[in-house]
Length: 167
Image (cartoon, rainbow, N blue to C red):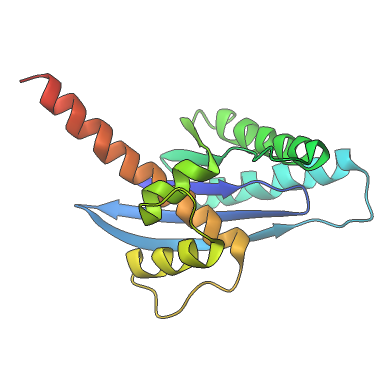
């Protein structure tokens, strides 16, 4: 099973691709799609779409996991992240890939067992769970890998519940 996790943003969109085989996780690729601050929003979204689409075409994920916008107090930021999230959903949908969305607290809970974890704690747990030598130097890429891990953990939980309910 290959999952691409996406941490949406209109300037920096993190992505992380993980393979899971028999419960073992392996990092395939990760990075940040960056777009210029000097272009109109429609051009930013266009660039994000094409770059993310290209990554999906190269790595051919089976499913997509996307972090939902956090709408604490800044509606403008939430709107921008929502636009970037929509770009990721569209890129996946055009490839007929299943899309799963998770709130930041769901991601933190699945990755660290605590929904209020800091970015540093999430990054360290991503490092540990993926058996990396060091933490990833980009929060956007680390968060995207965390979203992918969250999705795989959620799939396991759903599978266990489904099996249990069939008894």
